[in-house]
Length: 275
Image (cartoon, rainbow, N blue to C red):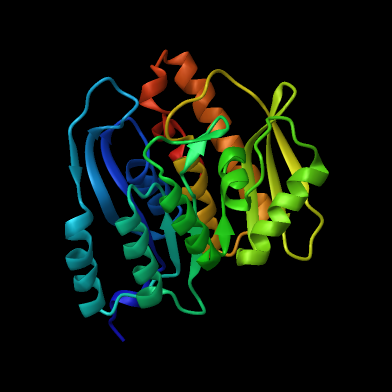
Protein backbone atom coordinates (compact mmCIF):
# COMPACT_ATOMS: atom_id res chain seq x y z
CA UNK A 1 0.00 0.00 0.00
CA UNK A 2 1.33 3.43 -0.96
CA UNK A 3 1.86 5.55 2.16
CA UNK A 4 4.15 8.30 3.47
CA UNK A 5 5.18 5.91 6.24
CA UNK A 6 6.83 3.14 4.22
CA UNK A 7 10.32 4.58 4.83
CA UNK A 8 12.10 5.15 8.14
CA UNK A 9 11.88 8.79 9.23
CA UNK A 10 13.36 10.97 11.96
CA UNK A 11 11.87 14.35 12.86
CA UNK A 12 14.70 16.74 13.79
CA UNK A 13 13.63 19.73 15.90
CA UNK A 14 16.46 22.25 15.92
CA UNK A 15 17.60 25.54 14.41
CA UNK A 16 18.89 25.89 10.87
CA UNK A 17 22.19 27.67 10.24
CA UNK A 18 23.05 28.23 6.59
CA UNK A 19 26.77 28.31 7.36
CA UNK A 20 28.90 26.91 10.18
CA UNK A 21 27.97 23.21 10.12
CA UNK A 22 25.71 22.74 13.11
CA UNK A 23 22.16 21.71 14.06
CA UNK A 24 19.88 20.77 11.13
CA UNK A 25 22.61 21.55 8.57
CA UNK A 26 24.67 18.56 9.77
CA UNK A 27 21.82 16.30 10.91
CA UNK A 28 20.16 16.32 7.48
CA UNK A 29 23.03 14.88 5.41
CA UNK A 30 24.16 12.48 8.15
CA UNK A 31 20.73 10.95 8.75
CA UNK A 32 20.06 10.81 5.00
CA UNK A 33 23.33 9.03 4.16
CA UNK A 34 22.49 6.50 6.87
CA UNK A 35 19.37 5.62 4.85
CA UNK A 36 16.79 7.33 7.05
CA UNK A 37 14.61 10.22 5.85
CA UNK A 38 15.35 13.42 7.79
CA UNK A 39 12.31 15.66 8.38
CA UNK A 40 13.39 19.02 9.89
CA UNK A 41 11.28 21.22 12.16
CA UNK A 42 13.14 24.56 12.28
CA UNK A 43 13.00 26.46 15.58
CA UNK A 44 14.83 29.46 14.11
CA UNK A 45 16.79 30.42 11.02
CA UNK A 46 20.37 31.74 11.14
CA UNK A 47 22.55 32.90 8.26
CA UNK A 48 25.47 31.51 10.29
CA UNK A 49 25.54 30.38 13.91
CA UNK A 50 26.00 32.60 16.95
CA UNK A 51 29.72 31.81 17.28
CA UNK A 52 30.38 34.37 14.55
CA UNK A 53 30.65 38.11 15.28
CA UNK A 54 27.42 38.88 13.43
CA UNK A 55 24.56 36.89 11.96
CA UNK A 56 21.02 37.11 10.61
CA UNK A 57 18.40 35.55 12.88
CA UNK A 58 14.70 34.80 12.45
CA UNK A 59 12.79 33.26 15.36
CA UNK A 60 10.45 30.57 14.07
CA UNK A 61 8.50 29.94 17.30
CA UNK A 62 5.23 31.52 16.13
CA UNK A 63 5.31 29.50 12.90
CA UNK A 64 6.20 26.10 14.36
CA UNK A 65 2.73 24.90 15.34
CA UNK A 66 1.16 25.73 11.95
CA UNK A 67 4.08 23.90 10.30
CA UNK A 68 3.59 20.86 12.55
CA UNK A 69 -0.19 20.86 12.02
CA UNK A 70 0.34 20.11 8.33
CA UNK A 71 2.28 16.98 9.30
CA UNK A 72 -0.66 15.88 11.46
CA UNK A 73 -2.92 16.23 8.39
CA UNK A 74 -0.52 13.99 6.45
CA UNK A 75 -0.63 11.41 9.26
CA UNK A 76 3.16 11.23 9.33
CA UNK A 77 4.69 8.68 11.67
CA UNK A 78 8.27 8.82 12.88
CA UNK A 79 10.70 6.08 13.88
CA UNK A 80 12.74 8.70 15.67
CA UNK A 81 12.32 12.21 17.06
CA UNK A 82 15.52 14.16 17.72
CA UNK A 83 15.66 17.48 19.58
CA UNK A 84 18.51 19.98 19.93
CA UNK A 85 18.81 23.59 21.09
CA UNK A 86 15.50 25.10 22.22
CA UNK A 87 15.55 28.87 22.58
CA UNK A 88 12.59 29.56 24.89
CA UNK A 89 10.02 28.11 27.28
CA UNK A 90 7.47 28.33 24.45
CA UNK A 91 9.64 26.13 22.21
CA UNK A 92 10.03 23.55 24.98
CA UNK A 93 6.22 23.48 25.30
CA UNK A 94 5.84 23.04 21.52
CA UNK A 95 8.25 20.09 21.60
CA UNK A 96 6.34 18.57 24.52
CA UNK A 97 3.13 18.78 22.48
CA UNK A 98 4.90 17.38 19.40
CA UNK A 99 5.88 14.31 21.43
CA UNK A 100 2.27 13.85 22.58
CA UNK A 101 1.07 14.07 18.97
CA UNK A 102 3.71 11.91 17.26
CA UNK A 103 5.47 9.62 19.76
CA UNK A 104 4.28 6.02 19.65
CA UNK A 105 5.56 2.87 21.36
CA UNK A 106 7.81 2.36 18.32
CA UNK A 107 9.26 5.89 18.27
CA UNK A 108 12.75 6.45 19.71
CA UNK A 109 13.25 9.92 21.19
CA UNK A 110 16.81 11.27 21.19
CA UNK A 111 17.40 14.49 23.14
CA UNK A 112 20.50 16.64 23.14
CA UNK A 113 19.68 19.11 25.95
CA UNK A 114 21.78 22.00 24.67
CA UNK A 115 21.80 24.12 27.83
CA UNK A 116 25.39 25.08 28.64
CA UNK A 117 29.07 24.22 28.75
CA UNK A 118 32.20 24.66 30.88
CA UNK A 119 30.19 24.48 34.09
CA UNK A 120 27.62 27.18 33.32
CA UNK A 121 24.23 27.40 31.63
CA UNK A 122 24.10 29.58 28.51
CA UNK A 123 23.02 33.15 29.22
CA UNK A 124 19.84 32.55 27.20
CA UNK A 125 18.87 29.65 29.46
CA UNK A 126 16.80 31.01 32.35
CA UNK A 127 16.10 29.12 35.57
CA UNK A 128 12.53 28.58 34.33
CA UNK A 129 13.79 27.03 31.09
CA UNK A 130 16.10 24.71 33.00
CA UNK A 131 13.14 23.51 35.08
CA UNK A 132 11.06 22.93 31.95
CA UNK A 133 13.90 21.00 30.32
CA UNK A 134 14.08 18.73 33.37
CA UNK A 135 10.44 17.84 32.69
CA UNK A 136 11.01 17.37 28.95
CA UNK A 137 13.89 14.88 29.29
CA UNK A 138 11.51 12.43 30.97
CA UNK A 139 10.21 11.69 27.46
CA UNK A 140 13.66 10.80 26.08
CA UNK A 141 14.78 7.26 25.31
CA UNK A 142 18.35 8.41 24.61
CA UNK A 143 19.86 11.46 26.31
CA UNK A 144 23.18 13.03 25.21
CA UNK A 145 24.12 15.81 27.66
CA UNK A 146 27.63 17.12 28.10
CA UNK A 147 28.96 17.15 31.67
CA UNK A 148 27.63 20.65 32.38
CA UNK A 149 24.14 19.78 31.15
CA UNK A 150 24.10 16.48 33.03
CA UNK A 151 24.92 18.33 36.26
CA UNK A 152 22.19 20.95 35.65
CA UNK A 153 19.58 18.28 34.91
CA UNK A 154 20.57 16.18 37.94
CA UNK A 155 20.90 19.19 40.31
CA UNK A 156 24.52 18.31 41.01
CA UNK A 157 27.33 20.81 41.50
CA UNK A 158 29.62 20.85 38.45
CA UNK A 159 33.25 19.89 38.66
CA UNK A 160 35.48 19.04 35.73
CA UNK A 161 37.16 15.95 37.14
CA UNK A 162 34.49 13.45 38.14
CA UNK A 163 35.21 9.81 38.84
CA UNK A 164 33.23 6.85 37.53
CA UNK A 165 31.22 6.57 40.74
CA UNK A 166 30.10 10.21 40.54
CA UNK A 167 29.23 9.96 36.84
CA UNK A 168 27.30 6.75 37.46
CA UNK A 169 25.29 8.43 40.20
CA UNK A 170 24.38 11.33 37.88
CA UNK A 171 23.49 9.03 34.98
CA UNK A 172 21.43 6.74 37.21
CA UNK A 173 19.52 9.73 38.57
CA UNK A 174 18.75 10.96 35.04
CA UNK A 175 17.80 7.47 33.90
CA UNK A 176 15.28 7.15 36.72
CA UNK A 177 13.46 10.12 35.17
CA UNK A 178 12.89 8.19 31.92
CA UNK A 179 15.80 7.74 29.49
CA UNK A 180 16.95 4.12 29.10
CA UNK A 181 20.28 5.17 27.56
CA UNK A 182 22.48 8.11 28.47
CA UNK A 183 25.84 9.24 27.19
CA UNK A 184 27.57 12.09 29.03
CA UNK A 185 29.78 13.54 26.32
CA UNK A 186 33.13 15.32 26.34
CA UNK A 187 34.28 14.26 29.81
CA UNK A 188 37.95 15.28 30.27
CA UNK A 189 40.15 12.24 30.99
CA UNK A 190 43.83 13.33 30.95
CA UNK A 191 44.79 13.77 27.27
CA UNK A 192 41.58 12.03 26.21
CA UNK A 193 37.92 12.95 25.93
CA UNK A 194 35.52 10.46 27.42
CA UNK A 195 31.95 9.55 26.53
CA UNK A 196 30.37 7.99 29.59
CA UNK A 197 27.81 5.37 28.50
CA UNK A 198 25.02 4.31 30.81
CA UNK A 199 22.33 1.78 29.88
CA UNK A 200 19.76 0.42 32.29
CA UNK A 201 20.73 -3.12 33.26
CA UNK A 202 24.31 -2.84 31.99
CA UNK A 203 27.64 -1.91 33.52
CA UNK A 204 28.46 1.78 32.83
CA UNK A 205 31.47 2.33 30.61
CA UNK A 206 33.81 5.24 29.83
CA UNK A 207 34.74 5.22 26.14
CA UNK A 208 37.88 7.28 25.56
CA UNK A 209 39.21 8.89 22.42
CA UNK A 210 42.37 10.97 21.94
CA UNK A 211 41.69 14.71 22.17
CA UNK A 212 42.54 16.52 18.94
CA UNK A 213 42.75 20.29 18.45
CA UNK A 214 40.34 22.81 19.95
CA UNK A 215 36.58 22.66 20.40
CA UNK A 216 34.63 23.18 17.15
CA UNK A 217 31.02 24.13 16.59
CA UNK A 218 28.46 21.47 15.75
CA UNK A 219 30.25 18.36 17.02
CA UNK A 220 27.41 17.62 19.45
CA UNK A 221 24.91 17.85 16.60
CA UNK A 222 26.99 15.45 14.50
CA UNK A 223 27.18 13.06 17.46
CA UNK A 224 23.43 13.04 18.18
CA UNK A 225 22.55 12.69 14.46
CA UNK A 226 24.64 9.52 14.17
CA UNK A 227 23.13 8.12 17.37
CA UNK A 228 19.61 8.92 16.15
CA UNK A 229 20.02 7.20 12.78
CA UNK A 230 21.76 4.21 14.36
CA UNK A 231 19.01 3.89 16.97
CA UNK A 232 16.22 3.60 14.41
CA UNK A 233 18.42 1.22 12.40
CA UNK A 234 18.78 -1.06 15.42
CA UNK A 235 22.49 -0.53 16.06
CA UNK A 236 23.85 -1.31 19.54
CA UNK A 237 24.21 1.83 21.70
CA UNK A 238 27.89 1.41 22.64
CA UNK A 239 28.80 0.59 19.04
CA UNK A 240 27.02 3.75 17.91
CA UNK A 241 28.78 5.97 20.48
CA UNK A 242 32.16 4.58 19.40
CA UNK A 243 31.29 5.16 15.73
CA UNK A 244 30.16 8.76 16.34
CA UNK A 245 33.29 9.63 18.34
CA UNK A 246 35.62 8.10 15.73
CA UNK A 247 33.81 9.90 12.90
CA UNK A 248 34.08 13.28 14.65
CA UNK A 249 37.79 12.72 15.42
CA UNK A 250 38.45 11.95 11.75
CA UNK A 251 36.53 15.07 10.66
CA UNK A 252 38.41 17.27 13.15
CA UNK A 253 41.76 15.96 11.89
CA UNK A 254 40.81 16.76 8.28
CA UNK A 255 39.44 20.18 9.28
CA UNK A 256 42.81 20.99 10.86
CA UNK A 257 44.61 19.78 7.72
CA UNK A 258 42.40 22.08 5.62
CA UNK A 259 43.07 24.98 8.04
CA UNK A 260 39.37 25.65 8.57
CA UNK A 261 38.39 28.20 11.23
CA UNK A 262 36.89 26.72 14.41
CA UNK A 263 33.61 28.52 13.68
CA UNK A 264 33.25 26.50 10.44
CA UNK A 265 32.70 23.28 12.38
CA UNK A 266 33.97 19.94 11.06
CA UNK A 267 34.14 18.95 7.39
CA UNK A 268 31.68 16.04 7.51
CA UNK A 269 31.44 16.07 3.69
CA UNK A 270 34.87 14.46 3.47
CA UNK A 271 33.72 11.28 5.22
CA UNK A 272 29.93 11.02 4.86
CA UNK A 273 30.28 8.05 2.54
CA UNK A 274 31.92 6.11 5.41
CA UNK A 275 28.83 6.23 7.60
